[in-house]
Length: 478
Image (cartoon, rainbow, N blue to C red; front, side, top):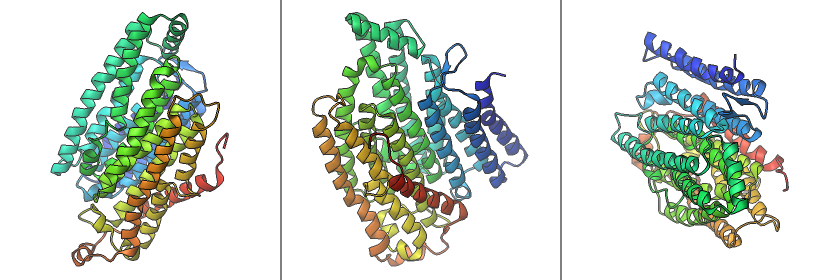
């Protein structure tokens, strides 16, 4: 059997098994479906490790295994497995069929793996859509909630727009080069740049512009981010854990691999674009977050700020920094959702900043875990968030980094924006530990869900990883 097909079998088999399970008893088997999904994800990661050697190509070059692609695939699969564990019992609370939900996530995981290893534009587009379409479904999965319906519809309309841009970009790239394999496209572009063939480069530059526009919309980089808070606010926390963590890691990983690889000859075009987007993200993300009282919207704007730092990491061509940042951000995001899940009641989630008042006394361990995660978001030393941000800044300021003009000013702006972010992160910490709950809020907490085993597992794992990466891991060149 083709080794690459072997790596896809666990996800496909898990999907079929869940479909069979749903036909037997569609409303129960919560624990069994979680176990099947987690085993499928871990089996796929193990199969990639054992059966896909670096440099191997499959299906006539449609798939090419690279070290970066494999690492990003591991990160995505690991974060998705953690998100699966996190969804246990929560989906019952929001009246979502757990088996159906997990089938959608397995389909999405299949797209993420292929997105990381795609080597031609046809496979790339199919994988991109296989990540995108299940994401829209997850956003609107709580169809009994009008906010979820609105979030799913907004995400779908945005997705149609980004898919059109993405496909247009690929079409122009094919028209400019006549090739579909990414390596061949890179070679054609490199020769055109060297020979000064402006005609071919014009089409290629237009295609790259469409591609970057689609991806920057998809990952909600400012100024293309205004849809993100609305989608976050309407999506249930289990779906949000998948959309905001592994999906974002996969799409950012794809962007990095495309820019470092096939579009490296056009670096003079895309580097200034990333620099401007990073600067705008630092300004708008932080300023819009300051006035937020809704927790989901606040974390959405925090995602915009972190996206700016990730763009700087891609800009400096540092693979280790970008992978480290994506992994750290992914686990921090999952940990924050785990903490919020554990603080909710059996009927509702915590939603506003005022809902967290006094949680340091009533939900001590959840509040402590969330505090560590928020300190990492803010970039406090000894956390992975600090190590990731410091690594990006240090790489950008190296004399031999060959960065575009004004890079120093954008880095300074990002660092100053990080100081602004201390305000809204510490607003949450202040509510947890220094405020007393309002009487109606205290009454609402009766019958709270508490720190269930899966919330505790994800929260402890997040804190351990954040502190371990922050204190003991040393990135190359740091």
